[in-house]
Length: 281
Image (cartoon, rainbow, N blue to C red; front, top):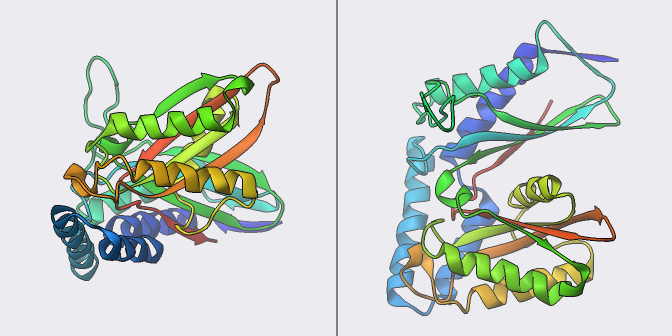
């Protein structure tokens, strides 16, 4: 059994949320630069240039990529041979989030009551944590500061097997079409298929953190990703919603087994920053 101090978890979480808010991923930057070369709209080209320059400045100056520094979402793989000592696992994560948003001067966007009081917690907590218990003695953490311009564009459809792959791709494309400029395109589109309604939404969000250019290992789902992306980029929404042939940078599909009577399909849209950071303890 490996003992990991709670403070080590807090420190790692803090560093990941600072990294994700200040530094765009290399895969995202490469995708944006590739899109700039392929973009046919002059306005779209100008928008992409500004996005790339914004990302460069954020990294060099250690400033937030976007004013919406997100709600803290974490996907954690917790090794079953790990024992967290000198503190509580969940509280350690929340302390790390608090420290990142305080010391990094990041906007705190969490309200305690979603309907009535809507009072800001002033700490950007609680974080929303999805934990899988896995073999081993390590803790692997993916941190996503999820902005709500894109999160608000999420959609769920309870399809049937009769809809097939075409019905799923139609739903993905229609979701992006309805979102229009709201999620700050060019976007990364996460899709979850199967499981239950709630599980489909979770794996859709997790899919947004996959490296751009990495397709689903199943060639049939990889083909769906390519088809959906091609159709999305023919919508004409373009960078920043100003028109062009670069509406999304990638479509990532995750899937799970499901019940014979249904086919849940969830779409989680992520803005052009596609903020996430990965770390291991």
